[in-house]
Image (cartoon, rainbow, N blue to C red):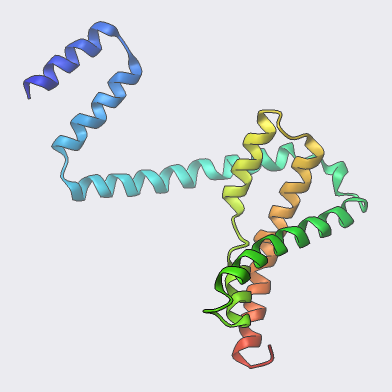
Length: 167
């Protein structure tokens, strides 16, 4: 307990805001029960995701350049989708070819194609740091949107076909 008072005194002398936050976290962890800490963490996550996620997606949509959604984008989008699909399918097929059937490999590969918010975060970071231009940014966002909407539909279709033995 005496160490905490020494740390508080040092932080106040240095006047470092970041250290105050760190120290508050250390103190909170020592005085709050594990159950209450998990409850607070769960509530904070739901509040932050619920509050800030819509702003992130609106920001990404606002930065997409609509001129790249013309008909010239369609062949590039189709090629991108095929490359991503084969990029997911081939490694899974080569790893699991001895343990899974072709149907199961198809289901696993299709299920791994959805990473909407994670992909958008990476794309947004690359765009903000000028690592990609707006045409590639718009293409990647549109491909991500396709996968977010299309993959669950394709996934349910594959599962339905497997269930009825049509595949």
